[in-house]
Image (cartoon, rainbow over all chains, first blue to last red; front, side, top):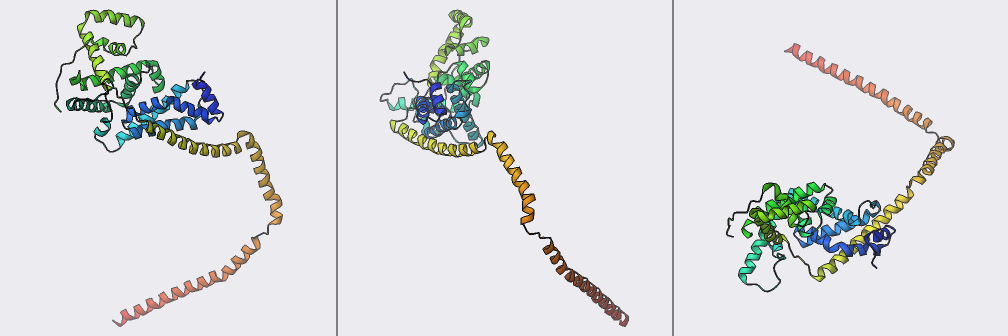
Length: 187
Length: 171
């Protein structure tokens, strides 16, 4: 039977590097996808998720086990992503990157050859979705991304965002209202 | 891109937040039951829910990088972890040296070293007092000369004033 996260953490704290690498393998895809939801850029998402693993590695001794490794680690990641968005806001304003959007496809669409019209339509949707998400305030976006994209429960999101469940519900609701208005033409 | 305006469905205001939670399956117990009953009779709320079912999946993205990306990802991360482990071991060594249990011993050693410096060391090291005195004595004549030169300056100024007075008298 595979050891649980907590067992791996205990081994990693004793210096077992392989145990930490096992934790990385378990969480790297989800970590990358969360980072990608914030950055919408592969390289940035890679850097952000790797930085989260590095932070977890160097601060593993401070992990007191009061919360699960999962909550502790993803809280590190979400904070890094929020910092990244803050830095991005302070920096020179950049236009929404269509080349990045063109890498992505709305997940409901089947992966099969499409007509040029369909491709244009998909690109338009992707672009508008990107813009709409980008315009959301950071905490609304966090709650939305963790719920809508990652399927976490309200309780889990509250733990990751270090806030009350009621606050998460409000953020999520506001995010959905804004997105619905901005994407009305696709309804 | 052509902008299309479309009228959105307006749900019952006080239920909107619960409708969002219902969409995500996060509404539990009594509230869920009440909303389900309400949905049977309210076309606006039912329409709103339908809109969410259509719109929200559009925001999902399927960005799945190729296998090579993950190979690079793991290689890079391993290198970063190696560097972090190296730094960590240095910090650990220093940390071990300055661990709380060693602090009283280090402090005592420091005090003893200082005490030895001021007691035993005083007899060993030559005193510099006599050298300092000699240096001051050497400087004294120079200081006296300075007073002499200052006096000479005053005399020069007196001569100058005198010559200026003579010139004005002659005029």
